[in-house]
Picture (cartoon, rainbow, N blue to C red):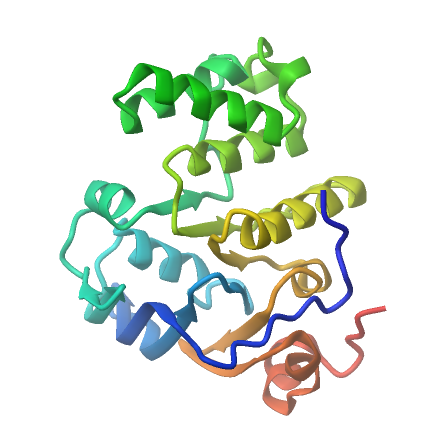
Length: 258
């Protein structure tokens, strides 16, 4: 697997926008979560989202994949307005993969049967389905774990399983909701390597949100910081940690990478 490089940045000299959130607003019981938010995400970019609890990071994921409809605004993928397109069609037609913070697999099925279940939903041809599962098993080094039930896997193994299940459909966009939460240092490094390889080898656009700011910033090209329903800072990891608004609203004055 690729080694994680500190501040691994890919410059997009000619941005090629894959996903656009246009003037997105979201209300819960009259409380505004997102306020006229605009965001462009480029093809094959790794984007990190940071911000305090309740700022709307998971809500943005739900709006992108169709779990929630915005109160106002548009979701545009590859130039097509997807705002009213249902979740299953976004997953299949527009190839969106989603890894939730919790769950995402069936606890009483083995690791292999979890992969098989998702493959049978997305891939009709039996031989193609088999080869895709075999590729995933090799890619994630699952051979010793195939017959272990999901509920008996470690935290890192569960996270790898859910990511691999999201890759069965060969997504163009992969959304990772707090992938580093409650994991040990070595497992976090393993997941960072997976994220980098998804971009460089699989050419997937990856969007990550997490409270582990240092871990997130070590494997993204660009990061945004959200506050009061808006994006208050955007830039490379080097730029974002020096941004006055980002430090005031999220990082604090003492935040350092090392």
